[in-house]
Amino acid sequence: MNYVEIYSLLSANYQMDHINKMPLSFGCKVIFHELEKREERKAWEMWLTLYPKMTKENFMPFSEFFKMQKQTISKRPKEDILDEVERIRGSVRDKKKAEDNARKSAKYEASV
Image (cartoon, rainbow, N blue to C red; front, side, top):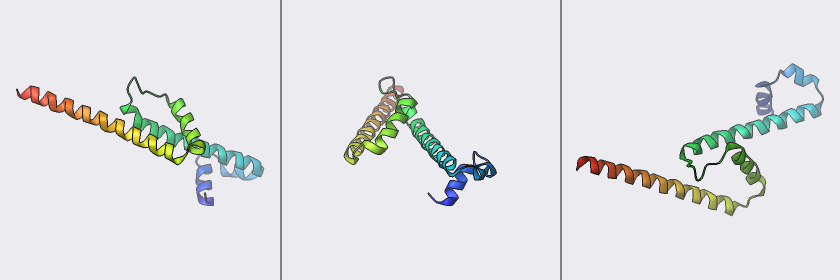
């Protein structure tokens, strides 16, 4: 992360005059806090894209999803992540096929 990104990150929520007068350790804490908030926003946006596809069987509250996202960043091997991606893609494909088949069936019954 370069200076411009850090400045942009901080100036969005803090007065820079105030930050500049504080000790360096405070500035570091603020930067880490803002980075955590940024990661939470990214996870929220990702969760929102998954929400419409969730059912009662596979619903996951955002708090669990975010906790899982934080863990996966540092502890999961690449192979596990790719396996999960394929599993998710497969479930989305299966759901889409089921919806398409239901639509086709409804069209056919309506035409008969």
